[in-house]
Amino acid sequence: MSALLRFFARFALVFEFLFLEIIAFVLIFHANAFQQSVIYKANTAFVVSVYETTSAWADYFYLGADNQRLAHENEMLVNKVARLETKLAALKDTSLVVTPAYRAISAKVVYSSINKIQNYILINKGKDYGLAPDMGVVSDEGVVGVVESVSEHFSVVLPILNTKLLVSGKLKSNDALGSVVWDGVSSTAAQFTEIPSHVEVVVGDSVVTSGFSAIFPEGIFIGTVEDVDYQDHKTFCDIELKLATDFQSLHYVRVIDVSRRQEQQQIENTIH
Amino acid sequence: MQDRLRIVLNFILLIAVQILILNNIQLFGLINPYLYILFIITLPMFVSPSFMLLIAFVLGGIIDVFSHSYGIHMAATVLIAFIRPYIMELFASREDMEKSAPTYRNFGLSFLKYASLLVVIHHFVLFSLEAFSFAHFGMVLLKTLCSSLVTMLLIFGIQSINFKRR
Image 1 (cartoon, chains in turn orange, red):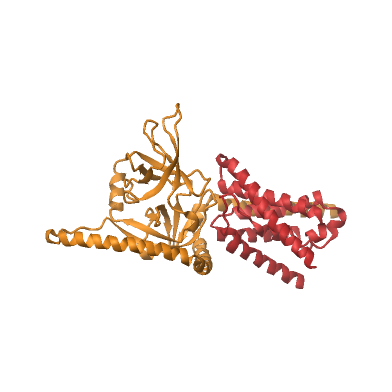
Image 2: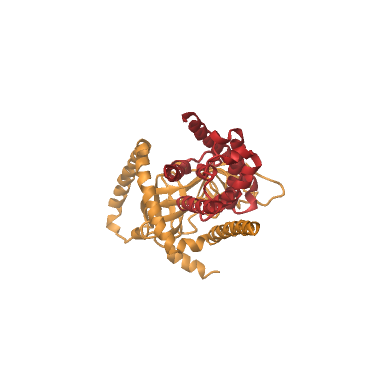
């Protein structure tokens, strides 16, 4: 009798184990559906509050570096304003109503990972600041990624360091178009693909956004060519990029809202 | 009673260390120590296997929530909680198994073997689920190797401090 009971007790444990594992795997397979759920939104708010508190402490450690960067950027902006003001004064007579091509919203990084194969960044602005999926995200140094989903006060950003993301770019010197993708290895390097082998690629050349996708304006720095590999039998060459953005010390980003994005995407959809 | 209180404190402390400190450690994209499983590794013997699975489920779930991963820590942690008794049988002697908890102090050298194997299994399952394809298999192996090494160093460090203190 006791042997029988022990037998059942043992099986109960196996069932319990399988049951818990099944729950875990359902979560893994339905990660996207789970993100939409109420329970996820509720606990995200809690998680974010924890990270916000700790990142508020951590902020103190980065004050020096951030200050320096801000001062540098300030200087640049002041110069730009001065230049533009003189231009504006000259243009004032022939006044034309021009809507700016894009607006930038600055946001703080509350969580980011760089060591996974699918990395994410969480920022502290959401619908409340007019953010929407498919908006581009940049840092002072260059492209960071694309907004994937937004909640009321937060957004999830897919950085270049995510194998799911593909950013269209071009070589600065000869305008050859390609795509920037990531192979999941180094957080400082990415690959620039779809450049035909007959195109001459120079090490040290810059890769910038193409401006075709209406996610980023044209000409935002993505990275510099570090290594080119031509192979005889291949149509495309392998290009290794050194990323402009330092993802390890990313604290502030700007979200780019291209004003005509929706209009462009709608008309693009009619093509296919 | 005091024992149980210490276990609960241990639980909270390990989670805090994991999500506030270790989750921010990202060396060369390869080193990702997951120290929190030390809780499952050293859980006292009086905890029943079935309750241990539930604890592992909750522990993995909490780490998942804070790492923005869905279910991968759960799956890996529940697995090592389930195989823990078998791994223990593999390395520990009969007298060892009578002791209150599997720690370095109680088990000695066989604790190192027992803990290392659990850590490697946990990390391998975790990184495989995270990569979610065999295309990155080499990367997964490399990450498992490097991260397990760091996790093990941390575990042995903590255990040897406990060893000296008492």
